[in-house]
Each structure stands twice: as structure tokens, then as C-alpha cells.
Length: 359
Image 1 (cartoon, rainbow, N blue to C red):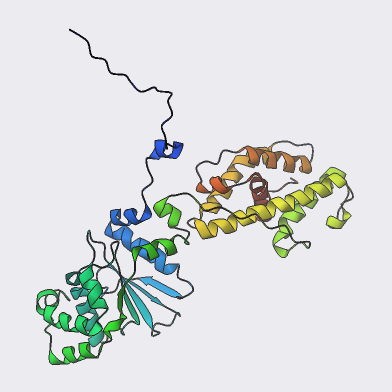
Image 2 (cartoon, rainbow, N blue to C red; image 1 turned 180 degrees about the vertical axis):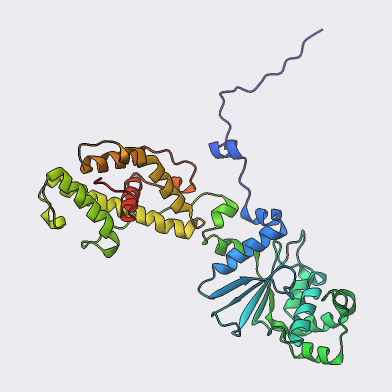
């Protein structure tokens, strides 16, 4: 009887299109798909991040969802005054595009609470859902008068018993007149792609979707004149140079040693490089990420700072060298951190009076 054999694929043969990232983590999930995987709480958090990022439009953004929200999830206004015009962003995380039956209760709450003067009518009322609106709702939103008329027809089924927990809300003649006077052109839906594109400009995007940090621009060159924000680390360096030279220095103009002048210039370049990383972090990662990186550098160099050195200048050189050797892989910013940033963070710590070169 013949034996059937099966050839195994070569373990050394390359797999077309397989990158290290894919091998370690699997194929990337597109952001528009990730929207569908969020739970309702994460969805509201995501929408809050997006609305809060629209700083060109809003000075005040508040989350109101939960018990007692009276049909408002996220409210935003252009000033801090409570009675200014405001916009409402209503979060709806469903497994289908929004249908008219998904919004009747929300429209009923808005009508009821504005009728009772609990709050004023918003300037815009935007539904935010991962699959936006289906065809039926999209058509209604383009015809405000028809949307109003269909709300009347849906009132008893979807609104009457669902607006409050204290009793039924009957569509009285006065409430109906209030609804007739409302502008139904304020209602809309934001497209998911708009959400993703605008959220990508926020510090929270990478934490939500991965996909890596954006490229980082080159650091600016230090200005010719030392700024007020450099005072502490510059003075600390002068102290270190004094310790090496054995003479007092009134300022950087007194530096006669060419090697020290060159070191001072490099130190300023490093400081401004680290400052550019700080700015980059503010735009691209959650708050506190850069500060945690700075703390890691501090922890990594303190043994060197506290060790014995022949003078303070030697302490500076040894500390910066150690900073450039540190493993900082736990912080997401390490992917955009340059060698100059490591030395610059030492000078930032000296600027914050956390490191002292001359003991």
C-alpha cells in the first residue's frame, strides 16, 4: 500500500506581505470598524473627546448623559455663559444605522423639557452614531416639516410613556403648539468619517485607534537670545562650568573655553529639542504622557547624579550620557524621541530645579 506524503512549507520561506507588526499584533483594524466595537460608555467618551477638540467653535463642553440628563448627552457652547446658544450631541451606539424609531423618544424629551423651560432649545441637535443614519431617517432629516408631522404620529407609541419616570406625557394642545413652533431644521447626523478625521487631530486618537504616532517636525533652532524660560538650566550649567574652571562666571559671555562654549550651544539645542517633543505630545497623546517620560529619565539618571564626580561639569556629561542609554520602551513617545531629546530632558529637569549639577 502506497504511503501518501504531504510536503510541509519551508520555515525559512518568506511570506509575502507579512510585516513584523502584523505577525505580532495581527492585521490593523480600520478606525471605522473600531467605532462599531465600542461599548456605549466608550462611545460617549469618544464623542466627548471629539466635541472637546472643536476648540475653534466651543469654549464650554459638558457631559450630561445619565440619570436626569433630560435628553442631553454632550452640550457645548461658544462661551462660558450658561444662557448662551448651545449645541447638543446625542450619542447613539447601535448595531444598525439610525432609524426614525431610534430618535422619536429623544425628540419628545427635547420638546417636553423645553416646553417646561428646563432649558432652551439648542442651536443644533446632532445625533452621533457609528453607522450614521439609514435612508429613511436621512430623508426625514432633509424634510423638517415632515419630521415634525411624523413625530406627532409616533408620540403615543414612542414618547408618551418614555419621556419621564413620573408619569405619562400627553400630547396636549399647548405642547403640540410648542412643537409646531420648534425649528426642526436643527436636527442632523454627523458622518463617521468626519468623526475619525477630526478626532485624528486630538491627543486621544492614538490611544483609541492605535495606528502609530504621526511624523514629528524638526525641532526649532534656539533663539540667539536666551529666553526667560531657560534661566534655571542655564544658571545650572554656568555653575558646572565654574566648578570646572575654578572661576566665577557672570554669564555666558564670560565663557572663554571653546570646549565649554560648544557644550553650552549643544545643550541649548538639546533643550529646545526636548521642548519640541513636549509640544508634540500635547497635540498627539493623552495629557501626562510626556511628564511620565520625564519622570522615567529622572529615575534613570539619579544614581549617576548622586555618584562622585571630579567636578560638576563631569556630572553633567555623565548624566546626559546615561540618559541617552536609557531603555524607555514603556512610553509611547519613545517612537518619536531623538537622542538630543534625552540630553534636553536632563536640562528640562535642571530647569525645574529637580537636578542640580553642583552639589
